[in-house]
Image (cartoon, rainbow, N blue to C red; front, side, top):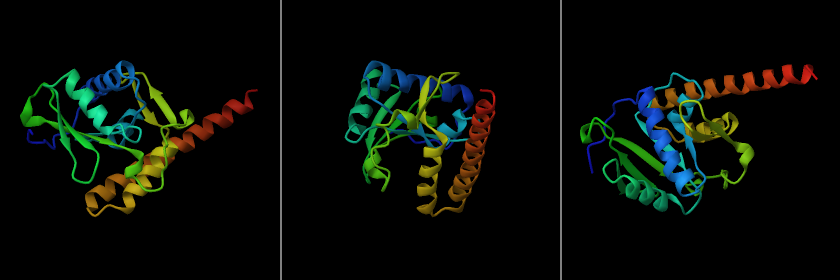
Length: 186
């Protein structure tokens, strides 16, 4: 496996890799998915930087998705099985192996208490501008962040999660405010 970089993705790299993953996973193979974590925060408009990509796929599909990405572009995607379950793919962008990024492929069964959250379309949101990608709605991302925050040991990660939760709460409040305005126009 290449050495994984902690270099942050820039906006254009995020757009390119999310489009590629969407094409392979969703369009070409018809598997439901949602980006989560820092990538999803970025897509919602947060200035949150991230050095990896987290993607959630249906239970039992992580290995298939990892293989599909690798088969589609073996130079860009290399597979690694994670010791605690799930799969990690090293995404090797234009800068080569010295700046590879993790793509962690997770399944709902790996996160206690969330159930099969990919089955319900109302919990998913499509972001077409720039990304052509699917994420969870802010309410679901907030719940995932709360679960993540409880299990964090590193202060830096907890701070990121806290800032993400504040950002998501603001997104939810804005959405509710817009709903109220639209209801008043009827």
